[in-house]
Amino acid sequence: MKTILTGLRPTGNLHLGHYFGACQNYLKYQGKYDFYLEVADVQALTDNFNNPEKVRKNVREITIDLLSIGLDPEKVNFFIQSKIPEIAELTVYYSNLVTVARLQRNPTVKTEMSQKKELFGNNGESITYGFLGYPVSQAADITCFDGKLIPVGEDQLPLLEQCREIVRKFNSIYGETLNEPEPILSETKRIKGLDGNDKMGKSLGNAIFLVDDDEKIKEKVMGAITDPSKIKKDDPANPDICMVYYYHKLVSPEEDVKKVCSECKKGARGCVACKKELIKNMNEFLNPIRDKRKFYEENTKVVDEILNKGTEKAREKAKEQMKKIKHSMMIDY
Image 1 (cartoon, rainbow, N blue to C red):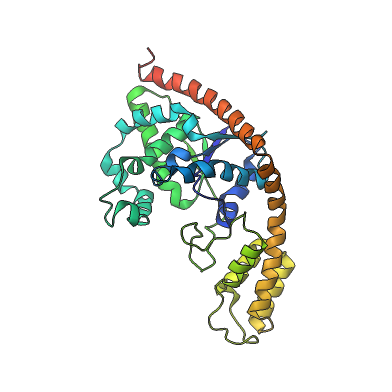
Image 2: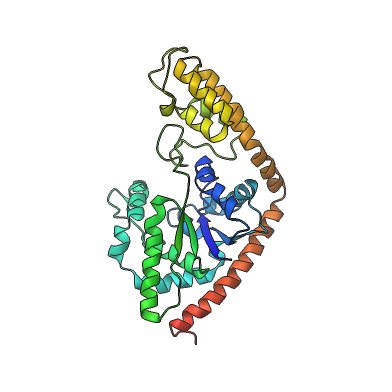
C-alpha cells in the first residue's frame, strides 16, 4: 500500500473545521493506505515555545479527539513527532538545501507570520529560526516516512511544494533517492466560523469544538450571525448569508435543511426557533463522539499505549529510510 502521511499540531482540541475539512477524509483513508498520523509537537513549539505545558497536555487531548471520531489504531499509526529523532536529523541536512530568501517568500509562512504579530512583531522582526524553517521540518516529516500522498488544503499547497523542491534538490546532488510527494486536496472547502469569518479557528473565538458540552453548544449557536435584514420573526430572509443555516447544512438531516431554507425565505421561521433546532441537531451529531471520548478519558493508559505502539512502528520506518538517505549522502560511516 502507498504511504499516506498527515499531521496535526497539539495546540488545542479539534473543532468542526478540522472535522469537516480534514478528519472526515482521514476516516476514508484508513485501511486503504499505510497511514501515519503525526502528533506534531515539535512544530507546535515553533510558536508555542514559551508554553510547553500547553503542547504537552494537548498531545493526549488531540489523540483522544481523533480516536473519538472513529479513527482505528489498528489501521492508523499515531506517533509523536519529537520521539522520532530521525526527523530532527533530516531537518538539519535539508536546511542546507533551501535558502532563507525562499522560506521568506513562502505564502503560507508569510500569512502565518502576519497572524502572529504579538509573537514575532509587526514586520516579523522577531521571527525565530525555528518558525521560519518549519517547512523544512515538514519536508523531513514527509520524506522520513517516504510519504507518497499528503492530505492538504489549498492554503497548505505552498508547504508541500517547498518539500517537492527540497526532494528535487536532494536527488540532483545525491542521486535518485527520494520520491516527490503528491497532494490529496480536501473535497471540503474551509469551514466558516460562527461569526461568518471564512476560517474557523481556536484563536478567533468562533469555533465549535468536538468537546463542547450541551451548554457550550447552546451559548455558541445562540450567538451565531444571521441575516441582519431580518428584524421581525415573520420577515423573509436570505439563508445563504445566515451562519445558522450554514451549520444546518453540515449536521442536520437533509429534510430539515430543505425545510429551514424554504421557511426562512418565506418568513415562516423565526431565528430563535431555528437556532434551537440547530442546537438539538448539533448535539445529536456530537453525542457519538462524546461517548467515545468518555471511554478514552477514563482509560488514558489505552491512549498512551496506542501512541507508544504507533511511535515504535514509525521509528522503525524512519530508521530504514535514514539508512538509504545517509548512504546516498555518503555519511553512512
